[in-house]
Amino acid sequence: MMTVPAWPVPLACLAAAFVIGFAAHRGGTCGVVAMTQWLDRRDARLMIGFATAMAAATLVCLPLAWTLGRGGQLPGSAPIGPALIGGGVLLGVGAFVNGACLIGSLWRLGNGEAHLVALPLGVLIGDLAGCLLGWRVVPPPGMFGMPGSTGLMLVAAGGLMAAATAAWLLPRPDGARLFGLMTAMGLAGGLLFVALPGWTWVEVEREAVTGLIAGMAHLPGPAGAALVATLAGALVSGWLTGRLRACWQGWDAAGRSVIGGALMMLGARLLPGGNDALLLGAAPAGAVSAILGFAVMNLSILGCAVLARIRRAERPARP
Image (cartoon, rainbow, N blue to C red):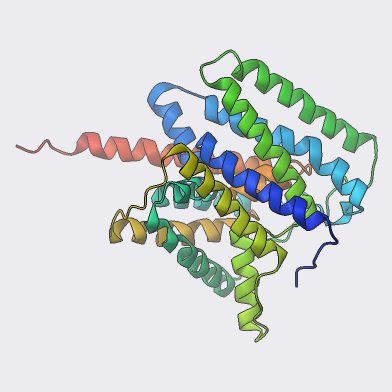
C-alpha cells in the first residue's frame, strides 16, 4: 500500500506532476521523436534535452531525500546483464510500435490523440504476462541514502551536466525554451520521485491490479491523483497552444498502442521502471543501470526506425 505523505507535501507533488505534464507537452518530449529528429536531420536538441532533465533531477533528488529522511527508499543499480539489455530493447521496441514512449504518450494525449487511451490496456496485459513469466527485477537499496561526500559529488556532477547542456542548447534555435522546459521537468520529476514514489501510470496500474488480485481493491491515493495532475498539465498545455483537438486515428493505431504498451511494460519489469522512472528517478539517484537501460531503449528505437526505412525503401513503387 502506498503511504499518504504529510501535508503540505501532497500539494507540492500535485504541482510537480502538473509541471511534468505541461513541460513534456510543450517540449515534445519523446524518445521516438528524439531518435527520428536525429535520424532525419541529425538534430540532437531533444536528446540533449533528456540530459538536461536528468541533470536537473539530480540536483534535487539526493538533497531532498536527505532532507525528508527518505534516502532509504532510493533505488540502487540493478544487475547489469541480459535482463537489463532485454528490458531496454523491449521498452524501445514497444515505444516504436506505439509511436511514442511513455512520456511521449502523455503529451500526445495532450493533443487529443484518443487512440492512446488503449495504452493502459496494453500496460495491463504486459504486467499480467510479466507476472506469469516471473519477470520482475527489484533493485537493491541505493548507495547514497545517507548524506556523504560521494553523494555530494553526484549532485555536483548533475550541476556540471546542466551547465554543459545549457552551453550546448542555448545558442541553438529554440534551445533556450527547450532548456527551460526540460529543467522544469527534471526539477519537478526529482521532487516527485522522492516525495511520492510510485506515481507513474505503470506503477499506479500495477498497484491497482495487485489490489484486485489480492481482493483489496481501493481507490487510487496520492499517486493516482499525481497521475491525473500530470495528464491535466499536458491537456492544459495542449489547450493553450491550440493543439488539443480530439482525433481518432483508427483501430489499427489503438491496436499498436495495446501491443506497444504490453512490450513497454514487459521491459519496465526487467529494467526496472519505464523511461520516466529511469530518467527522472533512478538515474538521478545514482543507479548506473538506469542510464544504461535508457540508452539501450533509445538505441532500440533508432534501430527500429532504421529498419522501417529500409523496408519502405525496398517496397516496389506502385504503378
